[in-house]
Image (cartoon, rainbow, N blue to C red):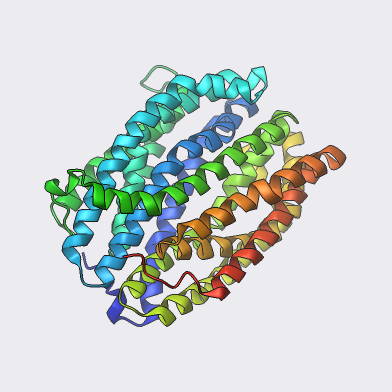
Length: 445
């Protein structure tokens, strides 16, 4: 399978060739969550709320792995752009090694303390048990999740977004097939929420095995050798220098999401279920921005490695224009048909009312926020993760959390949805200014 030759193709051609497989990869990832939501919704509003409440805590864990994967993307893509293929392979091996080690340690800690964390956040008793079951299982599968994200970033860095697409498609298919079997006990014991989490872990495990074979055998024109896995402090320090700010930004962001989710849960299972549906549909709408942002990050990295700063700057805005057009059309649909979208997942009358309210308020800020994803990944692809960290922390801690607190007190759940609207608009404007200033157009290799 040919990789996209970023440096020798026209910018728009390379962007679209990289973006469409990345978009499908994000679609498959969204389908993961939608399949769980669909089947758990058949059990009731408590069960469908479990992944929603658990996700911020899970993201708090895997954000560390995500930061390391970002470091791998920046360093590998820039080394390839500069013609240093052997150094790129060495960096890739170091990122894989440290990501897996960290995942094992944090996964065990997360599983041990998951219930304590949920109690600390005052999750209502009727939601505590099922959420803990889901969260603990995902924590134990953290090595698969970390490694899968790392492999996806490495393939993206070398200009290959098709392999992650095929792998994710396979994983989603496995998950979709075994999800109802494990949840409802078809040929297996009835596992309900535990079954949904277990299906996710198993399907990701298959992906890691296949990706390992592909990368270490050099089947995509880029090979990692087993000797590259041996830790070397000089390389690890560079990975950590770039990766830790990204991890910190995502971790602190995830902590804020955890607090936000607990605040919403305080309004009851109806609000939590509406937020869960809203988050899933928002993920579906913004999958185009995530796909474009993945393509942009790879191109920014290789352009900067090759000394083509103007191209690195230009590709960000071309991706942004495409994103606003596509996501805007989708969110127009959610604005007018929010109730019908909510009904696809759960038919509870109160949740339908709350879901419609959510989409009416939040929908038109989503195209703008989707552009923020592209700006953020451009910063990460350039290796300037401190700027990304500051923006991510500001988005929730500086803007959304205070607004949710004050708006929620005076307006209830309506205030929470307005807080999301305002925070999306403000942070996207701030990120656009950072891109305009061009201080990030400096290689890190």
